[in-house]
Length: 168
Image (tube, rainbow, N blue to C red; front, side, top):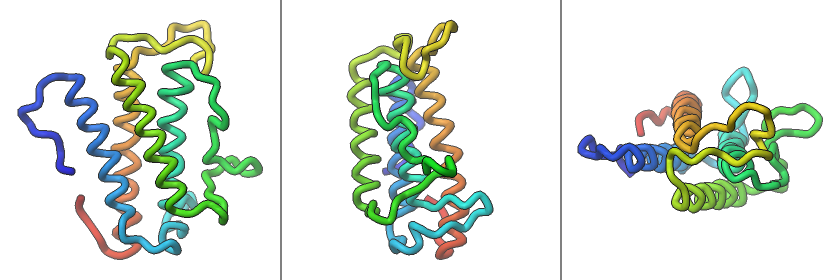
């Protein structure tokens, strides 16, 4: 997948195209890494590429299903080790199962967004069980976009350290 065309001017289409671009870029950056490389950290904070993928699956779940819709989802923080609070992928979780989880959450997110308008306000309860007004879908999607951009940039560095691969 390439970056959305510069002729795309509809804000909704542009935002959704960039989200899909970053989702796809994330997966492409993981392609070709061995299971060992997917489970090896190259950064001082200790996260691994596979843990990052699992984290982003739960980011999708937290912001759209739990956040925007107010669904009662469990687990909400499923990428975190219960003892350390750090991202984790159990030894019995395969790279394929984590990838499938990510793809399922992305599809659920797309379905949620397809049935809503950018100006729609998130449901109360769930993530936004606060006295303040919950954010609009547009804010949530922009938050997701910046989270993907940041994490894909971090993965750029990790991938270069792993095998020298650079670029998209």
